[in-house]
Amino acid sequence: MAGLNVRFTDEELEALRQRAEREGRSMQQFAHDAVITAINEHSRLFNEAADHVLAVSAELNRRLA
Image 1 (cartoon, one colour):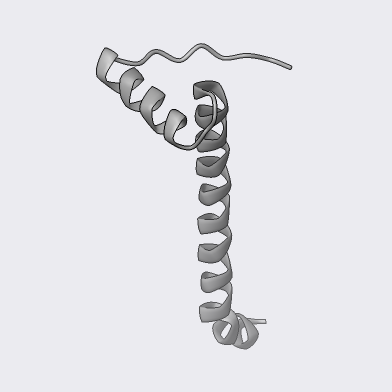
Image 2 (cartoon, rainbow, N blue to C red):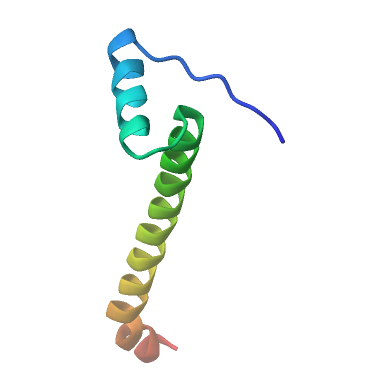
């Protein structure tokens, strides 16, 4: 599996350590899960926006066809 180095300030790293500890996870697992969640959320929002545009323009598209 590929790796990635990410740099944090001392304050950010301490906040990450505390949050991961509260959740009973390693900092690495917490950071990994946060990135994957952000990726999935972006995809979900894009798909919702695309669905909305298609629904709103469906009648116009039907008339233009």
